[in-house]
Length: 613
Image 1: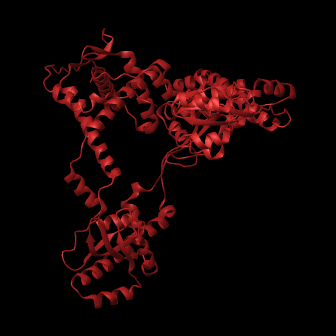
Image 2 (image 1 turned 180 degrees about the vertical axis):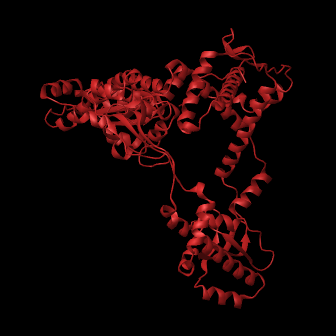
Image 3 (image 1 turned 120 degrees about the vertical axis):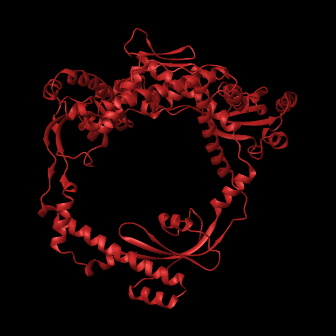
């Protein structure tokens, strides 16, 4: 996407506008408790600019559907009020930013919007933008193209404001220096790592303790609800397997796609590049008088890449050279020398030496590629038709009826829980959604991945149940053993650290040897070092600087490991702050400015909301 260029005199303008906005005298008005279903068609008015009920409901319903898929039966009507307010707040913010963009003269032209949409891979088929795919994906996500394009236009306009913010943001040299010093600081350390696994054989948990834990923590030992679903799957790969290809259809397809299997015409030329038209004309006259092209190129050409090769450019196709240059080359005859041709590089004298015509590959040589392409195209077309048909059928009919009418296979899943990894995340979220799980409805047609769609319905449920003691006693025993051994290694780590802090290195070493521990020598590191686990490095950089001597500290690494850290020294870097660091800080600064803009715009705008609480 290429955004409109920001005018040079607009740099810093946003900062000026923010200050200017403070002097505005608009009154903030919030009208809550007004019936949402009243006669007005607006749910909010932002400085006389209405947000319609239709626009709000479209966005609210999309947000609600996504949240329901994510939360499943945990979604309750109480969420509606929070979601209403969140949706209206977002729409108001977009409208405020759009108004500011208009005040600042930012505008997105239609060509920029088209480039943004067409560059999105999700709308592409065979690497090219597909209008059918575009409309289908929008429909599946609850949008029409007008709504979607309006949202994208707003986003592009707001992006221009953010780019201006980045120009306006700044970081003081002293702040940059301090952050750089922290970021580039180096620390020298070593560590001992104690593992609970080393002591499991020495720990015994009696069954009475295991039983007691079960009785006190019974609520922890439940087998979660499981469900089984019926589903109909449409996938490009499966459909493609049933596509039959006969020679007549394939040959007709070959004729239609012949250009795809045709090598481009290539031309071989040489040129002499000079700065002025007069000099180019003089070279043309010298050539007419029998001058040697190669020698003249070596003597006069400004093109360092070709002058020592007689100006030779080799073979090339259309689209490689400058438009003016190749337009001339592809209109010349072999042996012809051109009049001066102007491009942005200067003036060219061109000689055409050879032409290699494009060759159409024969049907037999490209048959394999043809079959693959034909099958893919036919399957894609059929998939689109089937998704439309399946969506309409399953809205009213059962999955069995839909599968029967469309001659599709009705599959059944295994039982699975809400946190299962047995199926795709979207498949599971849809199965556990309120509409499917509790209301017994067919799901909407969902897109699991590119070219793979599913509609499903719950077939069977297994309720959550309490696990028996015998089922979980092994699990509890392992858990309690781990707790005891971790407590033990924490005590050993603390004892070693305390002895080292007191300067009793000899006693500490006895304890280290007794527990078969060994210092891990790390040495000097930065924050992004790979010489040790990232968690350990973060703990090292959280320690205070050693004023004198060495700092020792005990840290818990995880549920099974403890650490004794030995921080020996700290030093700062003497190099200069890097450009990426400054860029990152500027990005943070511009984000803060963006939040300030929204707060100021809300404070100084006339905003009326007409929604129920």
